[in-house]
Image 1 (cartoon, rainbow, N blue to C red):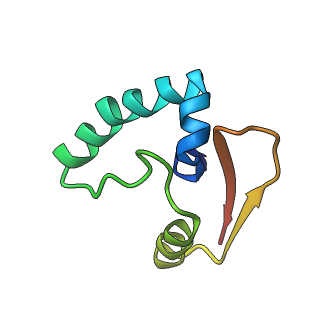
Image 2 (cartoon, rainbow, N blue to C red):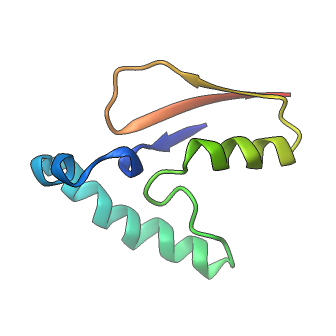
Length: 82
């Protein structure tokens, strides 16, 4: 599972990052409206918090969630296994 990490940014990082300033409005304009139109909760729009991901994965029957180490300030990769 791939998830963007913008929820982990502080205001200072967002202010200093042109890429982050582009990603946030794009995520809100695309993903949030689609999620809410389908009666979703809008999770993942600006970063799905890891504890929420772990809870959702457990409810879906996944036994383990492992955050894959990578050098990327904008995305996280998780490995979910049953």
